[in-house]
Length: 498
Image 1: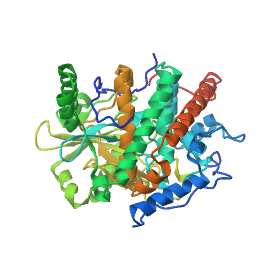
Image 2 (image 1 turned 180 degrees about the vertical axis):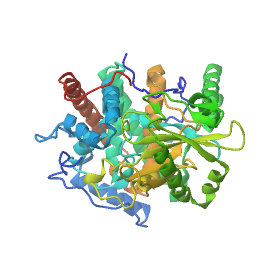
Image 3 (image 1 turned 90 degrees about the vertical axis):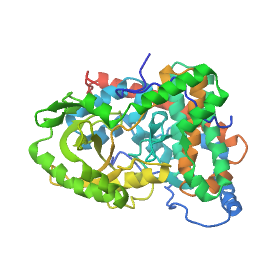
Image 4 (image 1 turned 135 degrees about the vertical axis):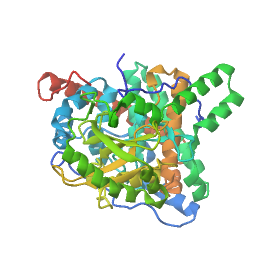
């Protein structure tokens, strides 16, 4: 069976306990004849019923059932060419690794082809109901992580592509990813549609609930997995409780201390990162580059604000290495940085990752921020109910070219859902949880009443979005076949080391 994920040391969630909701230049043309909407994030203070009427009025220009009407345009850009064009800004020796990971399954191809889907979505009629969108809300970009209060939250966890955009683009990417993943798992067509329908229905019903809440209540809405586990104890069987507590215990073990033991070695000069080429490479970061990064970290500290920047004073920057992880990000400049505190096992591992232009940006407004790292961090803070306290941004100048980066903790109680290890009932709950979570992230932009007014209480939008997901998953399969053929023809290279 094809693997859906490739990240190392993934915690397997065998019993997902959750609240179950009710059941590029030149190659990327702008949308035409449906030009991109230029509406900014909503700031109106109209009453909720007036906001809902705005959403209902959108149905006249875009009936809900037409959300499912997608077909490839006659002049649709070559998806392989779009991916190759993206590679121009990537580290050349890592591009074959990216291709190899995308070739492992249709789902991993989908993960790496956000640029392709963004171009397709931009050609569809739009609701014009803008939110801070994730831009890459596929099934594997949800997961668990630690909040500043040391709770385990479930939320979106990847924001490289975040940008204001129509809300339905995120929902469509999530729904399509569910069908693509289900194909890879060998599930029947009926089961694929059922899973996608559960997710979009969960999104709609949760958005209806959020639209009826005071805005601050919607803003603070979050999913605390520890609380959900407690609820499972009251409702579930002893076996379910034991499995849940075992999973939570495993998550709690994914700390900076355990990462230090796995990724670093204690030398006479102190802790140093361990070479594991080509995925972790110290020798590619020379003495001059280390000095430039060290100096740039001062700007990063200022981006944390006065509340969290003092944390850095208690740690000394000791080492940095090139780091490769994920699928879509492979080849983008990315580093792991080691900071050591006063105690032997007191260390923090930070990921320094390039913030590229969002794949959504060519089809919407330009970025409102001077730096792309700030775009990523601001979008993440807006969409997540609780974010990493060490999430910040900086610009690194003085190397081959100036680049914008964002910084986050590499591992801090982070875990992803293992689709292949899950039974059908748990997979149903998981996709519903993802739809539920996406609604909460979108509601923080303030557009919940408008979106709820458009979607309504009936299943029309659920059926349309499920139909879109099914059709687009078939297109992804054709694009994946074209990508494989390009590798066989020598048009693209793929590495044996993934």
